[in-house]
Length: 209
Image (tube, rainbow, N blue to C red; front, side, top):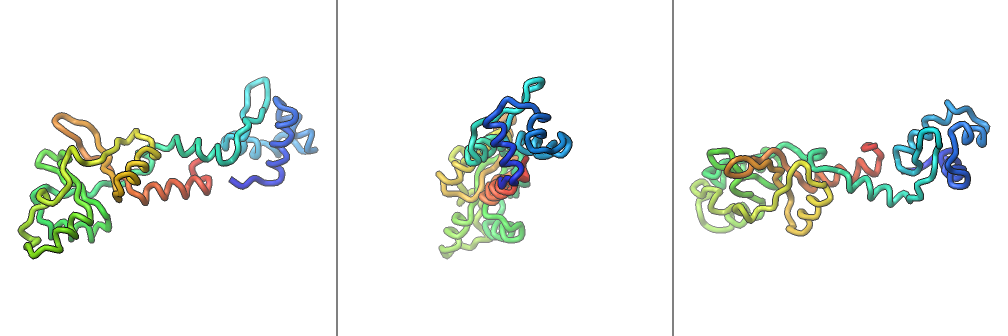
C-alpha cells in the first residue's frame, strides 16, 4: 500500500506522540478532524495504526510487508474458490478431453453415481492416455484418474496459504474444495493457481481492505 504524504505525516506524529487523539493530530497538521477522518480510517484498516476509545491512536510498529503477510494469512479458500467442473467416473477419456477444452480448465473432478468425489483427472493423465494406441472413446476415466485417497483436497474454511502450499508441493493445477458427507466427500468448488494469483493481485491493489 502506497501512502500519501499526509498519511506518512500522521504515522510519524503518532509514532512520536501516541497515544494521541484525532483532534491533536489534526491540530498538529493545522487541519480539521473531519478532513483527517478518511486518512485515519485507511491507516487503521490497513493496520498501521490502532485506535482505542477515550485513549486515541497509537502506532502498531508493523511494516508494510508484515501487514501484507498478516492479511494474506487471513484469506480463506471460500473467498476465492470457483465452481467445480465434474465428470462421472464412467465417462470416456475422449469426452473428458472435450469437457476440459470447453470449460477451459486444467483439472476435472471425477464423481460416482452418489455425486461423491472418487478421483481427479489432470491434463497429464489425459495426455498420457492419448500417447498410446488405445481408443480414447472406449477408455473410462476411472482407469486413468488419480484415485481417492491419493487426491489432495481442501475445505472452504482452510487458509488460502495452506491450499496454495499443497498446489506447490504436489505440482498440480487445482484442488477440489470438498464438504464431508455420509460415505465420502462432496465437491463444492475448486481452487486453482489462478485463484491464488487473484488473491495476490487484490492484496497488492488493496481491494481486500
